[in-house]
Length: 118
Image (cartoon, rainbow, N blue to C red; front, top):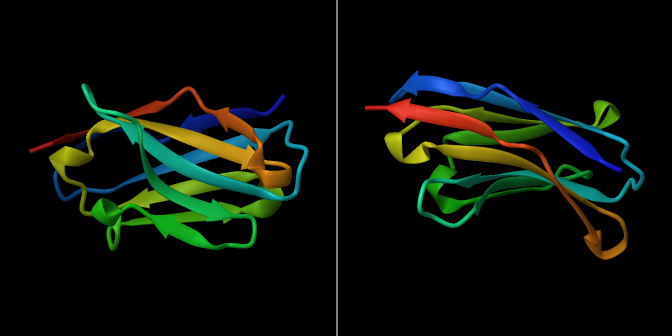
């Protein structure tokens, strides 16, 4: 069973920065994608950024140029550096890992709150 442990959320003023971390344990498959999703109150969960084990990244348009996803493959850890934060970035951020053939196995962290004050 894969477990994802997130850290780094908190309260920050608009324009500030935060760095989220997510450590995965119990992983089995080398082929995988790790990423960050977020869910604001009253809204659906949305993809923020993903990164493959080969280093290919994908970002939501709303965070391009402000957020950077990276990973330490040896440690099964993914990071999200968030700069120039806006109040609309306020949400619960969830770590996600998909692994296995056709990425059929899908795991989620417990979520970490990010609040950006104006």
